[in-house]
Image (tube, rainbow, N blue to C red):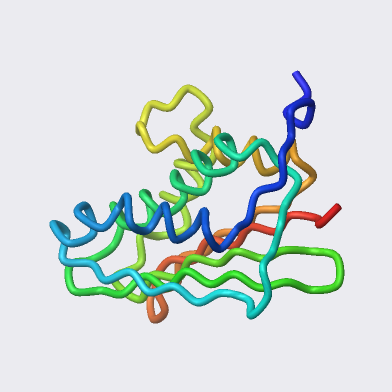
Length: 148
């Protein structure tokens, strides 16, 4: 199925703010602070808004779930000439790259993270996903979408 058949422009900063607000209680319960930083001008992506929102929420929610109590998660959004970049950086304890690989490759959702489905959404929409887990800098998700 082509995910782009019913696309409507989605303003990305508004979606990310909406996601952060919807996850505020979860973050507070886990004693994790969310910080947002966006590009100075509005960024519109030609995606089906609810699918984009749901999949970006999966990334943010999992970043909170794997975060260490007392840590900060920074959600950045910026653009280049042809791409929109969304980064989620958690400065707490690293999950480990092997565990992140397992989560992102879990097509049967055994771990119940939804990250494999969100990864597929990014790839199906001509995007790119990178993730990392470093002992000294924590966990990192980076999503790039082409701006069309």
